[in-house]
Image (cartoon, rainbow, N blue to C red; front, side, top):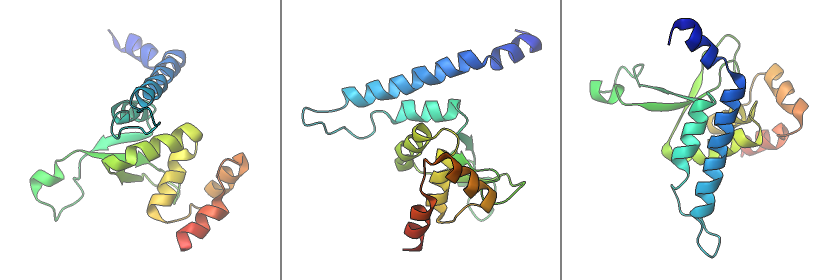
Length: 156
Protein backbone atom coordinates (compact mmCIF):
# COMPACT_ATOMS: atom_id res chain seq x y z
CA UNK A 1 0.00 0.00 0.00
CA UNK A 2 1.45 3.35 -0.95
CA UNK A 3 0.90 6.65 0.84
CA UNK A 4 -2.09 7.74 -1.26
CA UNK A 5 -3.78 4.36 -0.83
CA UNK A 6 -3.17 4.49 2.91
CA UNK A 7 -4.57 8.00 3.11
CA UNK A 8 -7.69 7.00 1.15
CA UNK A 9 -8.16 3.97 3.41
CA UNK A 10 -7.85 5.99 6.60
CA UNK A 11 -10.08 8.79 5.28
CA UNK A 12 -12.93 6.42 4.38
CA UNK A 13 -15.55 7.77 6.81
CA UNK A 14 -18.15 5.18 5.83
CA UNK A 15 -15.76 2.32 6.59
CA UNK A 16 -14.81 3.97 9.88
CA UNK A 17 -18.47 4.40 10.88
CA UNK A 18 -19.23 0.79 9.90
CA UNK A 19 -16.35 -0.43 12.08
CA UNK A 20 -17.59 1.65 15.01
CA UNK A 21 -21.12 0.31 14.54
CA UNK A 22 -19.73 -3.24 14.50
CA UNK A 23 -17.82 -2.56 17.75
CA UNK A 24 -20.92 -1.11 19.43
CA UNK A 25 -22.82 -4.23 18.36
CA UNK A 26 -20.06 -6.46 19.74
CA UNK A 27 -20.31 -4.67 23.09
CA UNK A 28 -24.08 -5.14 23.19
CA UNK A 29 -23.71 -8.82 22.28
CA UNK A 30 -21.10 -9.42 24.98
CA UNK A 31 -23.25 -7.64 27.52
CA UNK A 32 -26.27 -9.74 26.54
CA UNK A 33 -24.49 -13.09 26.72
CA UNK A 34 -22.88 -12.26 30.06
CA UNK A 35 -26.23 -11.79 31.81
CA UNK A 36 -27.50 -14.54 34.07
CA UNK A 37 -31.17 -15.49 34.35
CA UNK A 38 -31.76 -12.76 36.94
CA UNK A 39 -30.51 -10.10 34.51
CA UNK A 40 -27.27 -9.46 36.45
CA UNK A 41 -24.29 -9.03 34.16
CA UNK A 42 -20.91 -10.51 34.93
CA UNK A 43 -18.20 -7.93 35.37
CA UNK A 44 -15.41 -7.54 32.81
CA UNK A 45 -17.11 -9.36 29.93
CA UNK A 46 -17.61 -6.46 27.52
CA UNK A 47 -14.71 -4.20 28.53
CA UNK A 48 -12.31 -5.41 25.79
CA UNK A 49 -14.81 -4.47 23.07
CA UNK A 50 -15.61 -1.20 24.84
CA UNK A 51 -11.93 -0.38 24.96
CA UNK A 52 -11.49 -1.24 21.27
CA UNK A 53 -14.44 0.97 20.31
CA UNK A 54 -13.15 3.89 22.41
CA UNK A 55 -9.69 3.56 20.87
CA UNK A 56 -11.13 3.32 17.35
CA UNK A 57 -13.30 6.40 17.94
CA UNK A 58 -10.24 8.26 19.29
CA UNK A 59 -12.00 8.95 22.58
CA UNK A 60 -9.07 7.45 24.45
CA UNK A 61 -5.43 6.98 23.59
CA UNK A 62 -2.48 5.02 24.92
CA UNK A 63 0.54 6.68 26.42
CA UNK A 64 3.18 6.04 29.03
CA UNK A 65 3.74 7.89 32.30
CA UNK A 66 6.85 9.61 30.90
CA UNK A 67 6.06 12.90 32.67
CA UNK A 68 6.15 11.30 36.16
CA UNK A 69 9.82 12.09 36.76
CA UNK A 70 9.75 10.93 40.40
CA UNK A 71 8.51 7.44 39.43
CA UNK A 72 10.95 4.58 38.82
CA UNK A 73 11.89 4.17 35.15
CA UNK A 74 9.94 0.90 34.80
CA UNK A 75 6.76 2.50 36.11
CA UNK A 76 7.14 5.49 33.77
CA UNK A 77 7.26 3.07 30.83
CA UNK A 78 3.98 1.36 31.75
CA UNK A 79 1.02 1.92 29.44
CA UNK A 80 -1.61 4.41 30.47
CA UNK A 81 -5.11 4.86 29.09
CA UNK A 82 -6.28 8.44 28.75
CA UNK A 83 -9.50 10.21 27.77
CA UNK A 84 -8.86 13.13 25.46
CA UNK A 85 -10.13 16.44 26.85
CA UNK A 86 -8.23 18.99 24.80
CA UNK A 87 -9.58 22.54 25.16
CA UNK A 88 -12.30 21.52 27.64
CA UNK A 89 -10.78 23.28 30.64
CA UNK A 90 -8.46 25.74 28.84
CA UNK A 91 -7.95 26.84 25.24
CA UNK A 92 -4.98 25.60 23.27
CA UNK A 93 -4.39 22.90 25.82
CA UNK A 94 -3.43 19.35 24.93
CA UNK A 95 -5.10 17.65 27.87
CA UNK A 96 -6.17 14.21 28.95
CA UNK A 97 -7.54 12.43 31.98
CA UNK A 98 -6.08 9.04 32.84
CA UNK A 99 -8.49 6.20 33.47
CA UNK A 100 -8.39 3.02 35.47
CA UNK A 101 -9.70 -0.31 34.24
CA UNK A 102 -12.85 0.15 36.33
CA UNK A 103 -13.61 3.39 34.41
CA UNK A 104 -13.85 1.82 30.94
CA UNK A 105 -17.57 1.06 31.10
CA UNK A 106 -18.44 4.51 32.48
CA UNK A 107 -16.42 6.29 29.77
CA UNK A 108 -18.04 4.06 27.15
CA UNK A 109 -21.54 4.83 28.42
CA UNK A 110 -20.83 8.58 28.37
CA UNK A 111 -19.59 8.26 24.78
CA UNK A 112 -22.61 6.21 23.69
CA UNK A 113 -24.99 8.75 25.25
CA UNK A 114 -23.23 11.68 23.56
CA UNK A 115 -20.35 10.95 21.15
CA UNK A 116 -19.43 14.64 20.93
CA UNK A 117 -19.39 15.76 24.57
CA UNK A 118 -19.89 12.59 26.64
CA UNK A 119 -16.16 11.93 27.14
CA UNK A 120 -15.65 15.58 28.13
CA UNK A 121 -18.49 15.31 30.65
CA UNK A 122 -16.84 12.19 32.05
CA UNK A 123 -13.60 14.19 32.46
CA UNK A 124 -15.52 17.02 34.15
CA UNK A 125 -16.94 14.59 36.69
CA UNK A 126 -13.62 12.77 37.19
CA UNK A 127 -11.65 15.98 37.76
CA UNK A 128 -14.36 17.60 39.81
CA UNK A 129 -13.94 20.73 37.72
CA UNK A 130 -16.35 22.57 35.45
CA UNK A 131 -15.26 23.35 31.89
CA UNK A 132 -14.53 26.79 30.55
CA UNK A 133 -17.65 28.80 29.71
CA UNK A 134 -17.67 28.37 25.90
CA UNK A 135 -17.46 24.60 26.32
CA UNK A 136 -20.16 24.61 29.01
CA UNK A 137 -22.38 26.60 26.64
CA UNK A 138 -21.86 24.07 23.82
CA UNK A 139 -22.62 21.14 26.12
CA UNK A 140 -25.74 22.86 27.47
CA UNK A 141 -26.97 23.71 23.94
CA UNK A 142 -27.46 20.04 23.14
CA UNK A 143 -29.64 19.47 26.19
CA UNK A 144 -28.20 16.02 26.89
CA UNK A 145 -26.36 16.87 30.10
CA UNK A 146 -27.53 18.95 33.05
CA UNK A 147 -24.40 20.90 33.91
CA UNK A 148 -26.12 22.60 36.86
CA UNK A 149 -26.80 19.19 38.39
CA UNK A 150 -23.22 18.08 37.69
CA UNK A 151 -21.88 21.30 39.26
CA UNK A 152 -23.98 20.80 42.39
CA UNK A 153 -22.71 17.23 42.76
CA UNK A 154 -19.14 18.47 42.38
CA UNK A 155 -19.67 20.87 45.31
CA UNK A 156 -20.93 18.12 47.63
